[in-house]
Image (cartoon, rainbow over all chains, first blue to last red; front, side):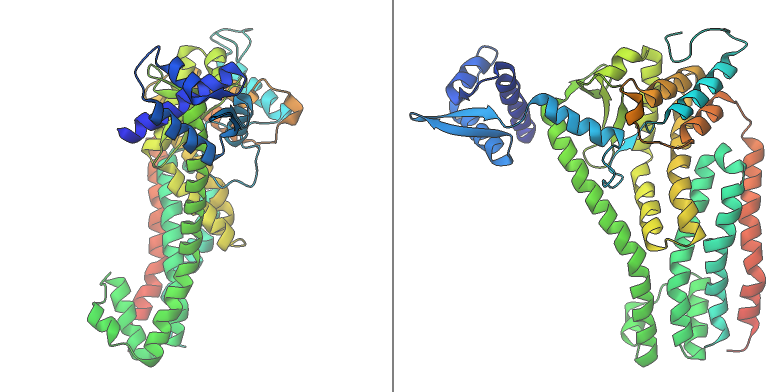
Length: 132
Length: 303
């Protein structure tokens, strides 16, 4: 339970820093989270430090406080996951099970033909893949 | 050298060459994928054990090799006391057998560990940028390209891209999700890892060569079948088409082979399951029968 909470807080902190698109202090993050629910300053500070050590946030000193900033954009992380998901990175072991591999144009045509043939009687002329 | 090596030799030939050759050509395999996967897995297990017993039997003196044959045929596990009493050539034979067995087992364990690490890393990123959708019971990832996949194992979850949610109808999406849940429930990643390990260790062996490509495809088909219990053929086939074709620049795709077309044809063509099961069982029976003369010959020889 405790671990799950920490994970959620990690996501909350990252969400805010990605949305603001500028470096921010722990105080700013705490104040923003506190609009929705109570969270202790020290907790957020600890989690921000964890994110820094994990390589998600970089920080620099501004006066007496740290200014935190995401190392990479949300889109970059998403692109990395999609590369895994679509099997573009070849060196990976079979860690994920995909619904279907991405395929070439000729194979798309073959699928197209198969789907059209199967639907032949039901609704001739409807584009396959589209919403029937 | 003694005649007790014949049994493991026969088993190795059967499970490593003969059964895989018939299995890869068998049409029943794709109609009853779960049975076919079971046969592949059994072949792998039998081959691993036989390849470990073969050098052991060649090393052993006649009398102890006869006892080993008895133990294997009656599936009797030696007691620790018996193991500690081993001396000289018997001990060497045991060491060789364990060493030979350790090669595929080690590759399997290594593959599992690497896959687990990759999954943990993936899940860690996903936890921070994915958004859990309780209605879909899946994590949604913000990306235009349609994709559906699952992380099996400890941090199990099904993931869909927002592109997939937009492209597919609710019925099609449900079909794709059911397919992924079938992978997770069936622990298919373990069998895929085993097939991969075999493929790297025994690269030239027909069992490994054919098995490492056949098993993942059969598992996809098994998951398709399971999904079809809850969705229509049309929904699953269309989801397959939409996700395979994608929407991103088409030229950039790596060729995934004809497996999607095979699956699609299979999903769209209803078939009766009775006949292929019989044929599958007949193949297994024939393989067992082929071994019988060897076993009889081996056991009836005086030690």
